[in-house]
Image 1 (cartoon, rainbow, N blue to C red):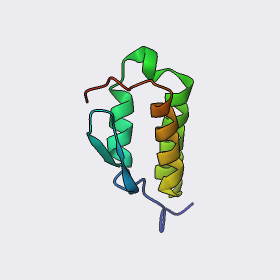
Image 2: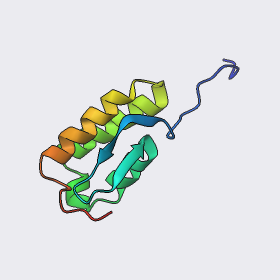
Image 3: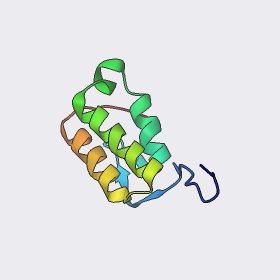
Image 4: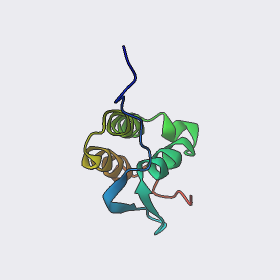
Length: 88
């Protein structure tokens, strides 16, 4: 299969509205959100809400999906109360 026209993963896609963290820091891109998740302590990172958020980020980045899907995943994970005290 030819790689001509193959889609490149874009972690630099921006969210329509940046995701504001409790610390007032904002996540503007898929990359920002993915790095935030990977820096969480293992117990938080492994929680189903954060795993779902990361799955949504991967699908959007790898299949050029709507960033709103990833944003919803991130907002749901943040709303669970996990990551609320993160200072990243």
